[in-house]
Image (cartoon, rainbow, N blue to C red; front, side, top):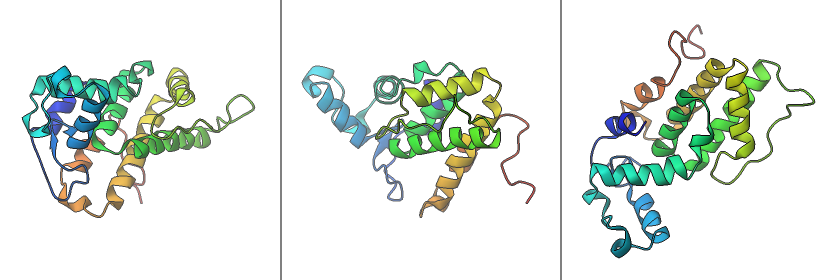
Length: 193
């Protein structure tokens, strides 16, 4: 997963239209500062203070710690779904990712008429994470044959959010990046309109 995501991120960027600010290999300066504070600072970690100075190896460690491990993506059984959510955490604000995931789960549950006495709408909406109920529901949907529907709903939610951002047009690679997570042979929602 990291190899693929690092190939999408590239090296250092400080685009004034990017709300993430200075970024190197998918790690923002804000993420680096938070990681340093949590892990004892420069003298302990050996990771540089300035995101511009990160090596690929250091970025891999930070991305794994701050996105993959911290958000417990290892608990998602399906590689494709976990990979997409991992990319979301690197490319979008965590609270938005939580909203995409819970919204997509709800979209699939409603469209497929899956809500019943055993499957009510999820209530564990943690501040920035996809909580345990969310991960369990993702695994349940995948185990019961709704992986494609979930993948489509995740892409649709993420795409709709991106298209509403004020500087959306400044990032021509964003929609292709999002669409790469759509299952093969499944056109975007509304393609027939």
